[in-house]
Amino acid sequence: MKAKQIHEEREQRTFALVFDAGDEVVSGPVPVPTDFAGRNGLGAASFAAIGAVEAALGYFDMEKKECERIPVHEQAEVLSLLGSVAPTGDGGPLVHAHAVLGASDGSTRGGRLLEARVRPTLEVVLVGSPEHLRRREDPETGLPLISVEG
Image 1: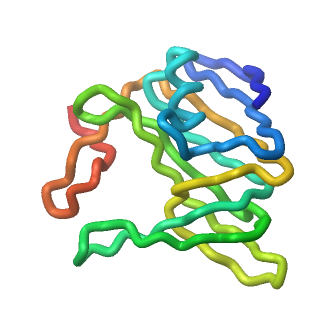
Image 2 (image 1 turned 90 degrees about the horizontal axis):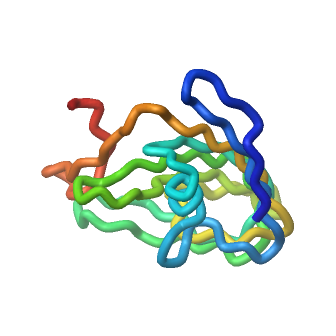
């Protein structure tokens, strides 16, 4: 992955991240957006991306309170990828990203981005937030959701 700061205004910094073929984006012990935000002193961030990946998506089943896997076993165009990085209650940052992927036959799959291996590139714009958003566990779902309360 290559990265470059492309803008800064009033403590808000914007970065371009370009991933190469084979790079893992959100899987692994420390997802890349989380690691990048931490190394660059960003308390929270949002990001958007386009490119192509082989991936695993997820659908959160409210009744089971678990994420059902949706594998995508081919190179798929990233039609939309949006996400956030914010610390959880214990202080550890968490990536939450959703994607819509286009298959070779024109069909689409969408959901929470669980895994993504770049094929052949992924171009990400990441915007760091000067405010520190926090995630708190939602009692109804058990999910760590962003809280805008103090």
